[in-house]
Amino acid sequence: MSADQSLILIVDDDFDFLEINRIILEGAGYRVVTATNPAEAQTRIDAEAPDLVITDLMMTSIDAGFAFAARLKGDPRTAGVPIIISTSVSSALGLNFHPDSAEDLAKMNVDAYFDKPIDAPALLAKVAELLAARG
Image 1 (cartoon, rainbow, N blue to C red):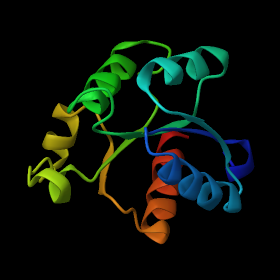
Image 2 (cartoon, rainbow, N blue to C red; image 1 turned 90 degrees about the vertical axis):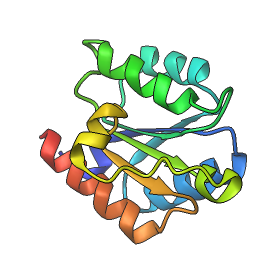
Image 3 (cartoon, one colour; image 1 turned 45 degrees about the horizontal axis):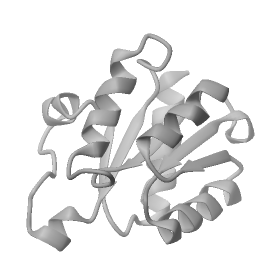
Image 4 (tube, helix red, strand yellow; image 1 turned 90 degrees about the horizontal axis):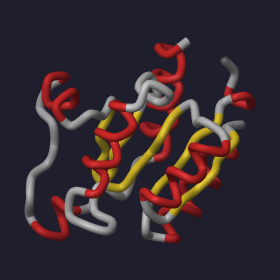
C-alpha cells in the first residue's frame, strides 16, 4: 500500500497538534482526516475506515485514548487497524504510561506509543512500518 492510498485518522483535542501532524503526514503523501474527540472520530471511521489511527491519550477523560483504542480493537471492522497513541501526560502530570514491552502495548490496545511532541522522522518511520506490516 503506497502512502498516497493510505488514510490516517488523527484524534486529538489540541488543534495545533492536529495541524502540525496533518501537515507532516500529508507532506509524506498520506491522506489525513482529523477529529477532536473519540465521538467525532467514530463518525469519521463510519464514513471511511482509516488505515491507521493516531490518538491522544487524554481528551474527554484521562484515559479517553485507551478507551477509544479498546473500542477500535474490539470492533471487527477496525480490529486490524494499527493505533499509535501519543501523550504529554508524562511531562504534564508526572504520570508514567510509557510501555516497556510489546506486551504492555497489547494491554494498551495500541501498536506504538509516542510522548509529545512527536519527532516527525520517528513518526513517519513508525507509520510506514505499521502500514507495511498490515499489508
